[in-house]
Image: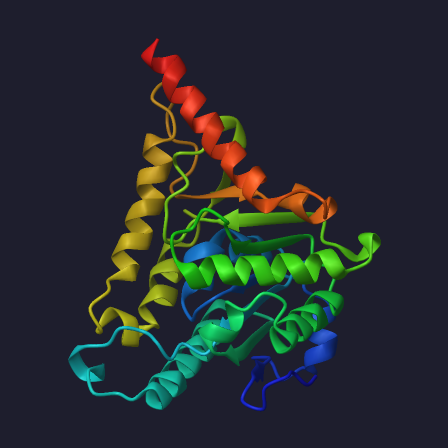
Length: 280
């Protein structure tokens, strides 16, 4: 497998051929940065670990991670040094989590933010064409990180370019930089991320360049999952120990004519209506 950038990294922890490994992926997460996969798609990883004979997890990181904030032992690291550190951290997470494949496309964020960028689109089309996953985990269009939204949009362009029969059956947009608790309950997809808590914590701790750099994503992510599970409903006991909220993006993939902004703002309008009804 070859991608548009010479510094793209393809890693299969068990050493199997990448193309054959990609073809058997059932749960695929395409994320912007190193550690986003571990924040977004822990539920999908657990699904695969629970049924390894039938399911396999794959991760894709689109950007090179060069622009991360840094402090402490990483304060004086150059962008090139940060790229190398973060790439290795993502590889370690793939080994620890038992991912079947981990791809890092190494695109600069500026390229990802360019609609229709030839290299980004070609790489994503190659990945989506190389597998038929049951579910794809993406960033959601209401996220407040510009690169996350851009990665989502580039993925949507690539998915819509596939023949209808080759598009994934389910596409979910997961919370990272903006919680999705505001979604109307009918629009929430609850991803069971309370399973394998020791693994969840260990995977997040792999990314020392972020934690030691001043951002405790490990504590924040695990805390949010627990809070989501507890505050989901006031009149029932918790069904899960941790929840990651997602929105169902499948309609945007199956109907290429559906406008992304209208779709997303429609969910916001449902929230507005819900609040108005409670105030009455």
